[in-house]
Length: 365
Ligand code: NAD
Ligand code: GLY
Image (cartoon, rainbow, N blue to C red):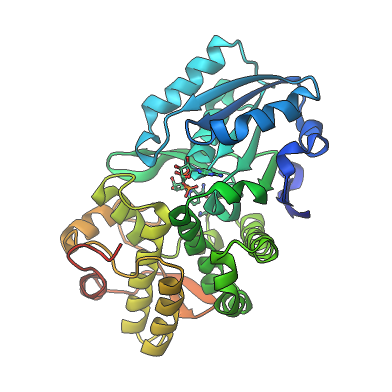
């Protein structure tokens, strides 16, 4: 097992990464101030892992209330969130009852937001079970639900007490979801860790075959990058925005197509290639670098062309981006592999051209 820390003063917390951690009462139980827990999960994950987690909690005499939500990005909304509040209130949960999010990023984001809101904040533990959630969404305290007009628009910064990333849960993850997680892993190489990008070029096939050692390394290195960025800029007033490489375009794809049509990681992959294309048009990276980035995403089985929503529709959707400042769109762009910046220098015409050349009629998913 590897353990990292997200260093946030008195709100610091550990990230444990390794196999069979769901059985580790010694890692979970010290974080409870009350012997009562609510486990928020979904209809897919519950039959796979809920019983295992409940057995571990029960071994420490923790009373467990499971809340099983429908599965899918399209359910990351107020109606579903309210079902969590109904369950918390119905079971007389108190301010120091612990909420555990067991699942992927949708459950983690929604469970975390519920924990942030219930009685103005209850203790919260992330037990991520997808590659994407283990390398990104479970770390850093961004919690949210979607709005019909924009992804993750309603939410809060709210840090967990613990992240328990049990690598064994990835054994049951569908291939398409595994590949979606690779998009966020490649992101860390692109924005701040060029040696990791090189490592990914060499080891990608091992990750696609779910090689245990390679997987632990990729999750650990991703979490180390994320923890460092979050520790430096918890509430995204600067460096943390770099974690959004490809996301402004990607969120437009997710919202424009309807939530759940493309996976988040798929939309981020296509969005990253639009950002690389734009960086190239600004003269910051050359065409060879764009091609090198594209090759890695193609090998990962991820889309490198966005769907044809129409340039104006992209721009309209992107106008809701959380990085918009004083009405001006700011984008995460690349100066080289391993160095990203937030910039507002691209003109509307340059952005439109990059979208135009990187979007096909259907996308290439
Ligand atoms: P997801 O939560 O929808 O999970 C993907 C699918 O895998 C679901 O069908 C889920 O039920 C299933 N699943 C989960 N674990 C499984 C397992 N071990 N075996 C088999 N099936 C399993 O998607 P995701 O990719 O994990 O997360 C995407 C979400 O995360 C998006 O809503 C995105 O906005 C959010 N996100 C948040 C942050 C953040 O910082 N908070 C960062 C990145 C992404
Ligand atoms: N996933 C982007 C962030 O956590 O800031």
